[in-house]
Image (cartoon, rainbow, N blue to C red; front, side, top):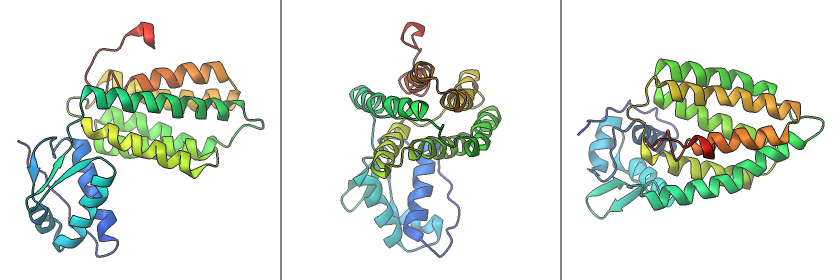
Length: 225
């Protein structure tokens, strides 16, 4: 069993900061699905009282990322194959039409400011910085989706992406398929800027299918890509 190591929190926004660190440990795989974790132990490592940590865990429980265990702590949720299929299905329904709408916009939406993030994703994938990769990946996709101007859309995509990360990222560090997936972000920007709706649909479908293949540690069927 991995032993998570937390950084000391700043004295502001403790609840949000605690939630961010716990979520990062879930992504890194050091907080393992099904294991019981003590709120008091985590609060001691973060050098804060148990209250902001308990509040953070309650927030994560509302988002479906953890399960509270009365008087004992919490467990990271175990993502079943059915859960994974349901999340991927919803993401396909939400995110592909969103990207198609962006590609159809004229004048083209302002995607150029997002290119540094797309390049950072390739670098982080090559370096094997998985926590950094997922943070920037989330930021990138929410920033692209926000170009639609619908914050509820962004919130729904954010929640589904966070639930997806219950899989953890063990074993993907420096993986060539992960690097190839990272390069798809800049390709997506190219297609949106060019107004290529069919190309955007095809790339986004392929990109989301990584959630059921690469991210889940399963082979991907090229026929479905």
